[in-house]
Length: 151
Image 1 (cartoon, rainbow, N blue to C red):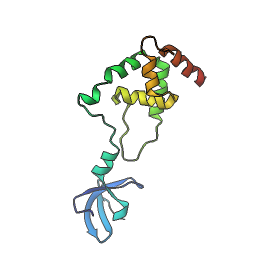
Image 2: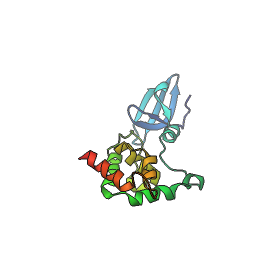
Image 3: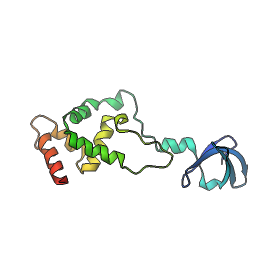
Image 4: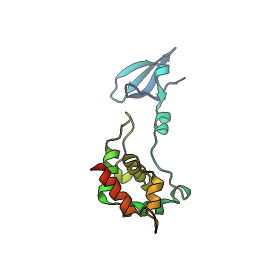
């Protein structure tokens, strides 16, 4: 149950506020603009839990970054047109109300590769493997086939 002072969210209406009163199953919240609204407790979630569930940040420790040089190398060898496919897909991705979207430049190399992979239907592993010396197909042919499929 919620208590006075909790920050809560009604996800379906994208309403966030601070609990000012609880009366049985009814929770009264005050929004940032001062407006007071009420919801059934079952329609609310704690804001910090909502944000944690939709957190897209990357852990910033050594173990989380161990493969970054591999991902960076792939991105460095991708054609600008292939990167643009990923950028467009990321920019047009469905947004969750109340969760601030991250701009392309704030994504990790793996997140960028994931966006490119999803947009092109080519697994991340295929991009990584194609970037290796002697790969079959080499990265250049993989990219050309992706671009050719897109017209």
